[in-house]
Amino acid sequence: MVKWMDNLPKWAKVVLALPCLDVVWVIYRLVKSLGKKQTLGVVLAVILIVVGLPWLWLLDIITIILLDKVLWF
Image 1 (cartoon, rainbow, N blue to C red):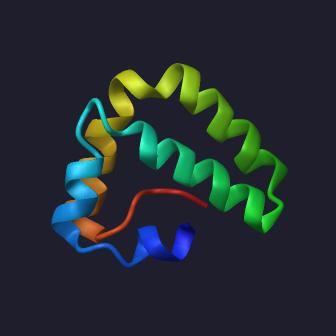
Image 2 (image 1 turned 60 degrees about the vertical axis):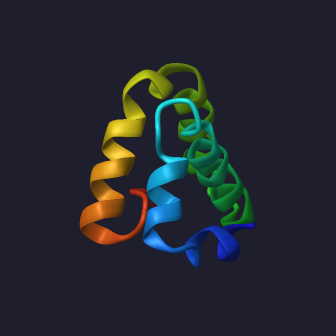
């Protein structure tokens, strides 16, 4: 799933970062941290699921447009 998400075109990444769909990127962060066995990343991803959804979409759109990726470890 992580490689597939990384290889999406920029327009698709931006669409997935829209407010109602941004939960996809939060789950991406969780799966990426689980795959790398990063405990801090997993805990932070779970916290972002609860707390970050109202504002995280804006950060995701900005970083996708500027860096072509979401901000994560």
